[in-house]
Length: 208
Image (tube, rainbow, N blue to C red; front, side, top):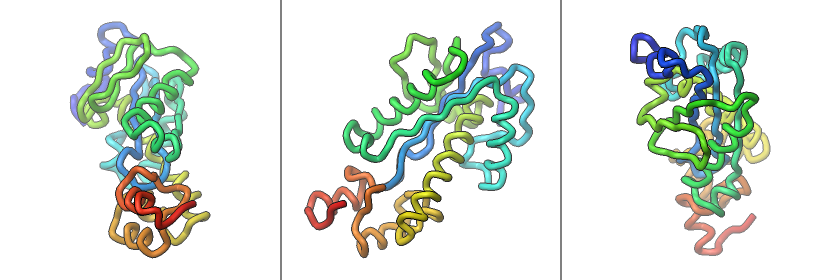
């Protein structure tokens, strides 16, 4: 993960200490919540292998999840349900999850490094960074915390609704998942405003 000095983009050299990396998981799926994490790492944290969660295996992410919790100054994760996503749209739900993640931190950050072109209604200096989860260690840490948390939620949903195989697709619109919606209709975990679930509800063919 560039730069060679991973803390270069964190601003430690400029004297800023409490820097929170912010990232989310679950903006694109047809089902399940959107999850955001905020992580303030210690300046001397050393977490080998930390990277964008999408570039890691499930086993690597799980190992890093516990390593981050041990080495972080503080971590907070926020979950916004599929019902809220439908009521305020996915962009606003993502911003809500990120805002809640920051506001729930034990320490108030001096600077927010946010993955992607997103700004939050918070009176804290913010820097949105495209592909920040590959450039900044604190954002990468947040991406792992959000992804692992959301995957655990989807495994729980699989136990309740096994026909959709949320354990495999994590709510994303795979062919198998879309065929399951065609066969069974959407369940309460599906987003009414997304993809095939949206079409089902628009046509009033299925309900909860």
